[in-house]
Image (cartoon, rainbow, N blue to C red; front, side, top):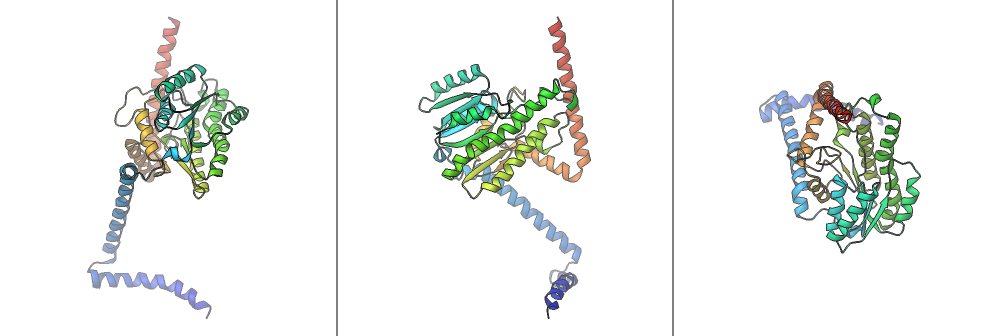
Length: 348
């Protein structure tokens, strides 16, 4: 008798497959292949519609219905690293507009002072605290940061600080490469790890908090000539996804941003267009998505690019790599030309 359940489980799929052609022919008047084609069409259409509806909800409807997170309600202070320019600067202003007190962390004393002065004029109702730190340093810098943050009710952490290649380059040909490797790993990986470890315990005590980690779309695509940068951003992407799963039942919201180019000093793009938004517009969109999307490019055109990368990898992985290499090699050649002209100007 003990064998009967196994026999049923073994024979049922076979009987089902045998019966399908007869059922299809007698009831629906088409054969098995036509049935499979219809089933595939229905399944793929349902998947596409589901993704589109979800996309619309997360980008517009959810925001309109206020289903996203009110950042001020989860803590009176926010920490922004790398805040003196680009995306970090825009996060500082966007959070200040929401009435959240700010801890601004950057390495340039002069730029940090200028930002603090400007924000005191624009947002007199909020409190500001500045910490001068170079995140290319090692573990020793975090003791001082921990002391400065002690006693603050930090509800939001923006792990924005990061460094990129000055221009696309072969891994072994990077200038002063040993120092460059160390600085990039410390700034792009160690900073995210340690800042999260410093601030997360307080969030867990209150059972609420938001951590936003800035990765890059290069972490999901082939990025030759930016190998170390894209790999460091892949760490941020994976780290954030797994922490999202670890702490989703403990009141902590992680947002993993994987953007494309944004107008900034790092990207070296000066004017916005369809594929490259301003830092201000990008940040506002990303903040509106907190609580609605745990992993997002933050911008519609970047989402299209992300989809194209996935499709390219799915159908022709080798070709996708070749296309990326061709494009990045052109940027590498352009960088070499710029270097050459700069060296000539300096000599003259």
